[in-house]
Image 1 (spheres, rainbow, N blue to C red):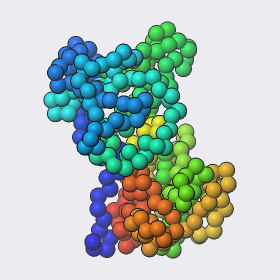
Image 2: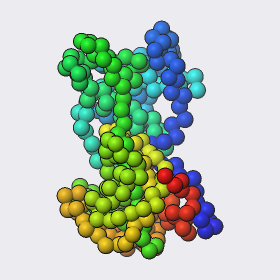
Image 3: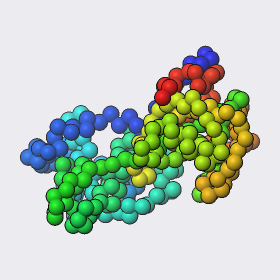
Length: 305
């Protein structure tokens, strides 16, 4: 690959290729007809986790196999085939690390479909009651909203913006480790965007809070929906003024600077690499690939914010 030329970034949980058909979400007659059609399919889940067939693809059941559930989400149209997911009762805080090994083997489009469904199901389970008056809510708009039975307030799915970033200095990037990570795992630093804050301000604040770095030249790279439970990961690069670290031990167990050879070794799964790379479906992995492929990462292929 020529210097400075990089493969397009295709983060995990993207590329479902589905017509979301927003135009149909309030057409109850049309939705009923779609659900009753012979081609309609219902996503099979184990709690919130995907169920795969013998070929490693998502399992879809005919709508005639429906069991009692609290409602349906119309995911959209796969060509002419309508796809639905159940609004199943589930622990909205469930974060099953065990599902990560399944995701690593899933087709990208399947992971995207399941990820969107998981986020929506989790949102429904967190919004069973109105935040204004406390009355129970009911699903409407084909599962893309909930309406309060008391005051009538309408609630819609939300995502939380999170910046995830690589600070660079002297041909190295900063990685951090949280206590809950698997052994040797290091990843990009990340944090929620706060009210009244821009993306670039959030990047600078988080790197300052967690690592004591002063940064500038913040550049957007790509984004990713993250269904644990429902974030939008906004991946960026930033240039650090120096490499001196002051680690917030409440946030990070450790942090270290790594060079391109270290990153390439980790991405290749080299057991002698100084760290274990994030899994391929995580945008931190995409960030590291993007950085390692670029001769000058902050000048090639990224958009200045």
